Amino acid sequence: MATTPENDAPLKPLHGGPLALLTIAVAFSTFMEVLDMTIVNVAVPHISGSLGVSPNEGTWTISSYALASAIMQPLTGWVARRFGEVRTFVVSVLLFVVFSMLCGLATSMPMLVVCRLMQGAGSGPMVALSLTLLLTSYPKEKQGVALALWAMTVVVAPIFGPILGGWITDNFSWPWIFYINLPVGLAAAVITWSILHKRETKTFKAPIDAVGLVLLVVGVGCLQFMLDNGNDHDWFASPLILTLGLVALVCLIFLVVWEIHAKHPVIDLSLFKQRNFTVGVVALTLGMFAFFGINVVFPLWLQLDLGYTATWAGLATAPVGVLAFLLSPILGKNMHRLDLRAVVTFAFIVFAFTSYWFAGFDSNASFGTLVVPRFVMGMAIPCFFIPLNQIYLSGLPASEIASASGLSNFCRTMGSSMSTAITVTLWQHRGELHHANLTEDVSNANPAATQFLQGLAQHGMPHTQSLGLIDQLVNREALTLAVNDVFWGCAVLFLLLIPILWFAKPPFGSAGGAVGH
Image (cartoon, rainbow, N blue to C red; front, side):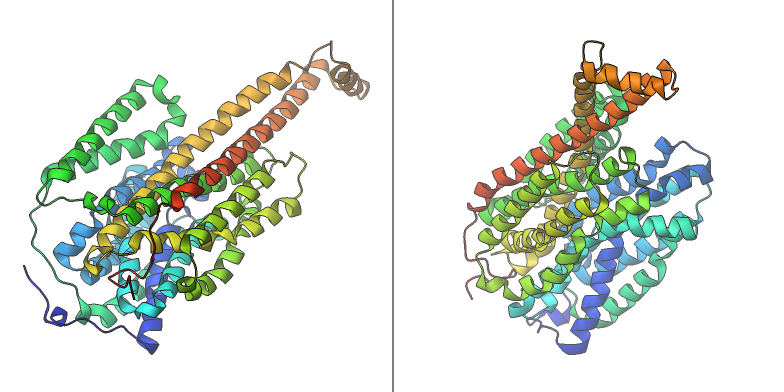
């Protein structure tokens, strides 16, 4: 075991200018990493056209990044123990910057996909370690504020990603969505290293758990690929998707069994013996499933069904970040006075209420009508993310924060990936069902349908075109009813999660041994 001299005595928290500067650097690096998960979404058509591939192939720029990042997140604890938390974070930021530049310089789709894979792998530990570094640098009485600032960047970044990506792509060119990472990343790396290089954590030369690592890479890789491509291949009707699902299932089951009994596990599953960690991670994962499903289906519905452009769909989505941004610091400052289970319960009730609100909209809903519930939903976001992070970290020693953050971020990422796959598929299938049901009413036996067709004929529209117009109208209403079903399902899931929260055991002091103060 090797240790740094600075770790012989407990480190004192930072104060004043260095703490403020470190917070800005870490927050911007976290924002940048999470932003890259969604900023590419709206640029896929431009990237595909520029590199001469189909839009389906273009989506590999999204899935390759998510795949590599998902694999690296649960490895954060092991890597940080091996090389030190500060060193790992700084190297992770630098790797992210280097491969961001190479992504922008890519001249072919294979080159871009490889660079995105490496970018995702390099950035995997960034989010978890950013939280760890903030918590260990803040005084214990202000760790709630650190959690709030961290959660704010993680939550707001995916919302602003499509807006920023659309604006950059329309006004410059798609490589600039990668080039903007250069100044932010370099500044974050330099500031973090200059402030924290003398506060490096202890390092342990633990042997590599090769079997666990292979099972993790293959299992998570197959699962992520299946989730990203299942909808395009009609899910388990495709031999490829079925094979991927079976391989993922077998590998992940063996991974759990192996890691439980391994002497030096690559993933510390013993964390789940802690009741608060288990409750917090389960609530975070399933809550993220419902929250992310709303945020995926809503802009899709606006663009595919209501005719919104990508920019206007982003503007309709963005108001959810206003209250989240304003309330996060206030909540973080006062968390020690609140029962965190009650705070998250309030968040789930607000999420359920606004989801049910959305479930009542029709295809004639105006922009202003759609924006109001998104704005109201924003008050629940800090009440969801910040307390849950505090709950799952409560009672853990400082040495386990990196592992706990990495594992929880992995579960959050997989919850988001599963949500995207399942909610989009559900929306499409429910749309087909509603389309079939609505079509039954378009017949000569229905006076309203007959009258509508006669009215179109009187205006000179041929019968074939009239039927085509009716099909468009039916499809529009069918997809609207389907999106209502998805929102209603998310509302129910939020309410079902509330009892789980109350299995958490107070007190919920700050992580790193502050419980009981």
